[in-house]
Length: 123
Image (tube, rainbow, N blue to C red; front, side, top):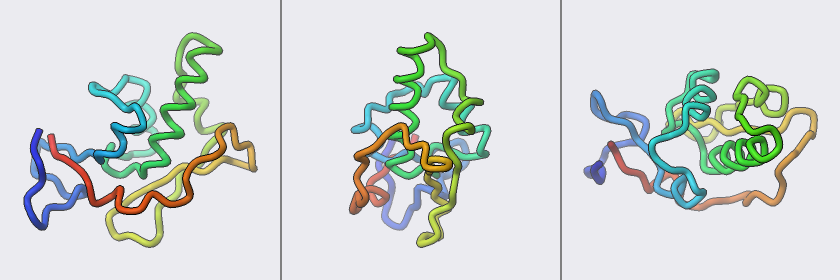
């Protein structure tokens, strides 16, 4: 793990490196990422560095709730509840999740997380 050098971007890590946002750890994300989270990222062709902070909050809360109710995660069912959208105001290739048809299972997420995308590390 290392701190990025000046000018490095989370979306363009060196070969064999992965970028990750510091604040995602505050949302209770831990390493190694679970197979279910990797499967979900794979479903949308995303790397961990492309998922916006509220996306991490939604993923972790959804799987925690699902695990309590049904004992095992099912990333395929995620698509029944959420859709993935690119954040238009950035050229970093960042994405967020949005509830489908107003089926908001999780509410009260912050609307603004100023500066979260500027703090990251590489591993």
